[in-house]
Every structure is written in structure tokens, then in C-alpha cells.
Amino acid sequence: MRHKGKALAAAMAAGVLILAAGCSGNDSGNEAGSGPGGLSVPKIDKMATLGTGEGTVNVIAWAGYVEDGSTDPKVDWVSDFEKETGCKVNSKVAGTSDEMVSLMKTGEYDVVSASGDASLRLIYGGDVAPVNTDLIPNYKDVFEGLKNKQWNSVDGQPYGVPHGRGANLLMYRTDVVKPAPTSWAAVFDANSPYQGKITAYDSPIYIADAALYLMTTQPDLGIKNPYALDDTQFKAATDLLTAQNKMIGEYWSDYTKEVQAFKAGNSVLGTTWQVITNLAQADKAPVEAFLPNEGATGWSDTWMISSKSKHPNCAYMWMNHIISPKSNAAVAEWFGEAPANKLACQQTADKNFCATYHADDEAYYQKVWYWTTPIAQCLDGRTNVTCKDYSAWTQAWTTIKG
Image 1 (cartoon, rainbow, N blue to C red):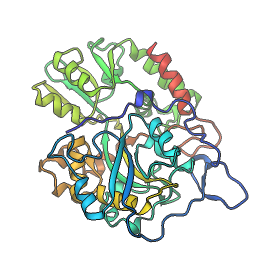
Image 2 (image 1 turned 90 degrees about the horizontal axis):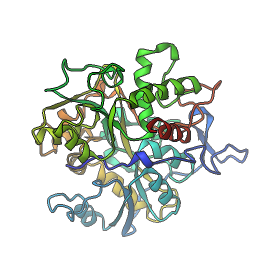
Image 3 (image 1 turned 60 degrees about the vertical axis):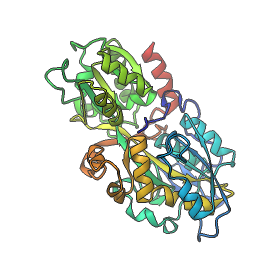
């Protein structure tokens, strides 16, 4: 099992999506569709038919997504693909979404496992092509709750295939935190008895966690989407985090450090991932994690094909293979997330795996707001105000932490 290998704390600072030339509308018929706030999408044709593999596919992925047995001989879903298709997989691990976007712009890579904070930039930047799901047989078995979402499609046109998903949970030490918390209020309470032992995710995207909490506790702010914050809403969220900073013992981005902090009792309450909870419990730490009453933020990654792919047939074959039941189950267990293919749950080695990760629990995931790049054009559909983009989030996060 592997951690969530995304260094979002350093990701996506400047240029986070007003996006690059080629994104603005024009009169030449090159506009394929419009996204949130009227952003236009470059017209790029999707592949019509699947041909013979070109012998190679160049992949950018998060750590743990493309395993060929070199990390662990028992963990390999690449070798079978190469034998079946004749497409040799050349993979590069990326550490941040910014790195993925930069690499995809070179045109040297065919597919990428983009998170929601990168996928919009790739779509509106013209770096990825719309996907013809008719050429991906396993797409039909992807959970409906992951299809045609704001971070992976435009006007109902998919720009990739979902890979998996997970929620950002609230974890606590059961021997210290009593009574058991039920709400995110536990980490924002200015009078908390756990001051100095509260932890939070170290990334500007954590501002969305505060905004989500305010959606419930301060409805007068009118927050409808935690990634769409106008000046007033943004100030309320950052003010809340500034106040919380006084209670934070440490911010975390390295999953191993959070496991150790909870084991040692240096942290007793804060945000986590399910895989971290599993590892801490395996190490006998008295912890539990849950989805609070307000819901939570989370992630869903998408396999996307380059608009400049030199090996499109192998790329399509890879996208179909990686979301096949067997491969998707293997990746999900190794990485620590819910699979995207509903049939993968029958293939996991741990027969309770999908229940642990709520893989087929759409009611659970309806409470999760997946990471999406904040942009100036409000993602909640408002057109009468400007929302804070990710560069503003990054600047604010630096100030919050001091």
C-alpha cells in the first residue's frame, strides 16, 4: 500500500488558470465548448477509431500508479499490458501538478494521471484531447459518480477516464480526544483543549476545508462551492485558518510523519487520508478517522491523453488497461484509494478493501468536494463577481502560516 504521493503544498502557484494563449474565445470556429465562467476550450478532435499500437507509450504519473514489479515483484500491472499490446511503457513519476502540466506541454508524453487541480489547466490550455470513450471498453464500468464532472469534462464531453478517489478525513486519538468528535468544529474551536496537538494538511488547497466548514456554520456567507470564493468568502476562510494556526502543532504533507506524530501523541486531532489511518492502526496507534457531518474535501484523478500524442493508439490501450478491473484493483490497494471501476471490488486481495474505502458508496462521496483548481471565473456559476484564483490562495497560505 502506498501513500498519496502529491506535493500539493508546493503546487500550482502562478498561472493557475487564466490559462495560456489558445484558451480565449475567437471567431474562427476553434472553440469546442465553454467551461465555468465562460472559459473557452480549444477545438481538438477526438480519436475516431483505434488502430495498431505504435510500440511505445510515454506516461507521466503519480508515484505508485505505474508499477512493473521493480518496486515489489508482487506489484506489477505493466508487464501484462506490454505483453498483450506490444506497447512498451516508459513512465516518469511527477511530484507535483505543476510538474505534470509543464511536462505535458512539451508534447513528449502521451498520457498523464492528472488530479483535479491540474486537469482544468490541461483542458483549457489545449494540452489534452477530448476522449472517445467508445474506444475504451472498460469505461462503461466506471462508477457514474466519477463521470462527466467539472474537473474531467466540458459540456458533457469527457477529457479523460477516472482512475480513483478518496476523501480527506478527520482523525483523532481515541484515548485522548473525548468525547469523540463529529464535526470539523473540533479543529477550529478557539477554546480547544488540544491546542498545540492539532494538525492540518500543508497546502493552499486546505483553504477549501475552511470554506467547506463555513458553508454549514456561516450560511449567510453564501458559499456554494469551497473552491469558488469571492473576496468576502475568501477573507472569512483565511481568517478562520489564521486563528486556527495558533492551535496547530505542525502542518503535514508527508504521510509517514503524520503516522509517527499520531503514534507519539504529538498530534491527536486533524486531517488525514484513509491509508494513513490504516497504517497508524497497523502500528497499534489508538486512532479512528471519519467523514464529519459537514462532509469533506477529497481527490479524484483522471487519465488524460496529450493533444500532441505521438502514440495515441498505445495511449488509448493504456487508459483502457489501467481502469480494467484487475489493474484498477491492484493500483487502488497499492496506492490506498477507492478504485474507479466498480468491478474492481471483486478483484481486490483484501475482500473488505472497497468497504473500507467506501468505493461503491455514492451517498458517501456525494459529501466529498473533490479538489478543483480555483479560478477567477467562479466555479459555482456566478458571473457578477470575481473569485480568488489559486495564485491568491498560494499567497494567502504563506501569510496564514507566518
